[in-house]
Length: 93
Image (tube, rainbow, N blue to C red; front, side, top):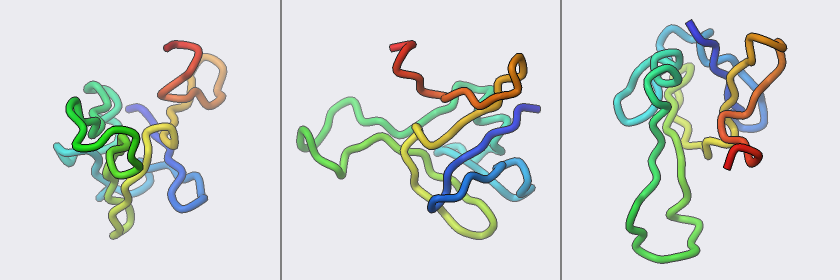
């Protein structure tokens, strides 16, 4: 089981700590979301270019609240170094 962390309203939390937590359009648990392609909402055809309203995001239901965050605020611990690794890393682009 992969641990998945997210920054929700300025606080880093382990999403796996909430057994009711679900993520993405398929509403799956955090480990399953991460292991099965980590789907985000990212429109291919944008209604308007260069607009805040068309940014990529992930919906997260955590402790009874729904959050909509940019994927940059989701991390998964690197099991080899036990440090955080960004899911979206600029060096890999």
